[in-house]
Amino acid sequence: MATGSTPSSGTTIYSVAERAGVSIASVSRVLQGSTAVSEKTRLRVLAAADELKYVPLAAARSLAVRHHEAHGLVLPELSGPYYSELLMGFESRAAELGQSVVLMLAEGKSDLVRAVRNLATRVDGLAMLGSSAIPDATVTAMHGSKPVVLIAGDARPDIDTVTSENTGSAEAITSHVLGHGRRRVLFAGDPASGPDVRDRYAGFVAAHEAAHLSAAEPVRIALREIDGRALADRLLSGDLRADALVCANDELALAVMKRLREGGQVVPDDIAIVGWDDVMTARYVEPGLTTVRQPVRELGASAADRLHQRITGAPVGDGPQVIPTSLVIRSSCGCPPEGVSR
Image (cartoon, rainbow, N blue to C red; front, side):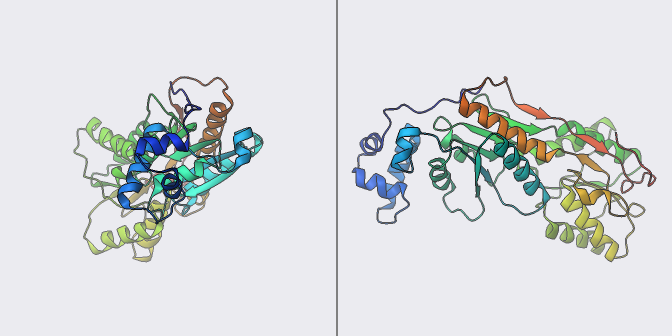
């Protein structure tokens, strides 16, 4: 179980300077992002700060209260419905708890660890998305200094995690597609982009193994609208051949469906398409998108809850918190339009 430990009260800027073998002024310049120090000095100071788990306080008043009444949230970006839903769930629950939210986007940060360390001076705890855009070094740099909750990341014995179930539902939706007789099924999404997509591909493979079939290698693309259109163009040109697509999110699936329709293809007659998330648009397009319902707002709210529990010292359950997902059967997979949810 994560301990939510805090650094020693004796860890100060003087401690960092002594460990790094430099002056206090040099430490101050490095932590403020100044370029008026050598790269060698900068690396020594940052290494010492990491070893000592030192987080500088932003202002003198924080020395007295040591509470900011704010939660930090670090996301890769804000494009697409997933991140907006996650943010709304997190912010709404934090507000109910009397906390504000300070948002940071990893996109465009040349030194994410330093940026997150600076964010930590303004908040009481941090929630971060488990993604290749936010590497482990960023998470571990903060753990032990401030409470940290990892969203949609791998379970760890030392850090709280809140995630959605992925593998079982991915296996179920892939088995459903195979049950329609589709045999050239492709998985669209890059398993290296994060634990959630990796586990969805694992479910895709498991469904094929259960049906005594060989699973195709994933089509490694990002999960944005522009990537879905590019994938559809590859299908239309014959560069890729498939009679079904299991997409790692709905944004990708919906973009593919629209572009294929523009190119004269009929879903699901020519190709079945399924997604993941059950965004609002999925129920209104024609054909309706078969997908996996992931309660993204609940995921964000649960992360805010867990972080607040750590900050306040409230009891926290053992192990990661896993939120169930479920299939939503519509007609893009080949089922009749009056498909049912289950």
